[in-house]
Length: 265
Image: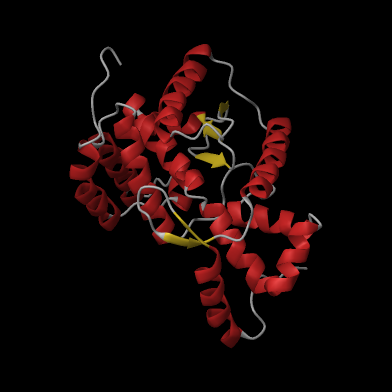
């Protein structure tokens, strides 16, 4: 059974620092340096496998209005992301009790019907989808997956596991993306990654023609729900607080430079 925790922690930091300088990549928009050791092709393959499994288990929504809305918003965000190497797909899971959304590597986006009362309108939905897309194009899952595998296997073990498509890698993928027995994202991203996805998402929704100020309104609605003790699943993995909202407000001037309302949107 994988522990994903070092038996001797004192070697971990030097090893991570060495790999950081050798294998660092750069996140889009924020230009933060990242340690990512997982090939993008491997990550997308694992994402596609998870996508197929979810489609087998999930009850999809076939309400044409809801499906059209999610696809309309999703494709506008996808166009703004400008990642033609991703095979974007947008699916709606029929579950009014689950207020959540998530995105898998390669651009497979899932939105639960339960989050729609919180998003309220297109711009609110754009906030959620662009945030999830932000996580994916910044490869936050691969970043976390790289750290988990490096801690568990070390340099040689990681290289061998990737070469052999080891079940260890597949398990690390499920842990990194929080995909367990239940559908959806169960494991929170780090606070740093959350802020980064907020930043990227804000720029993407602005480029797509959605008012970035709608993101502030969405998270304020989430925060009110949290204070009243009504915590949607989305908040278990995307914690809302005053600091987060304050950070978004500081990013608004940058995002507004990209905002051009679309006529008749």
